[in-house]
Picture (cartoon, rainbow, N blue to C red):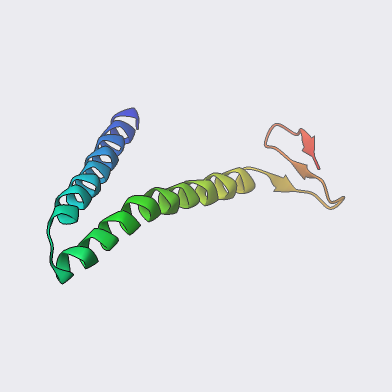
Length: 85
């Protein structure tokens, strides 16, 4: 799992560097399609990390929610029997 996370991190870094270099290249080209491509690169450079953060946040919440056992008194119990509000 650690190796998979490391590969994913490097892939993310390379994708963001690609967006940044694309934005740099497209900013020097004076054409209508280059302005559109620049906007797309900047949008993706901002939205991809935000989307990934949201996905990881939801996954963490769902994983935490599935490890708890909800009892009849409205309080949840962990697998160890500890009660939470």
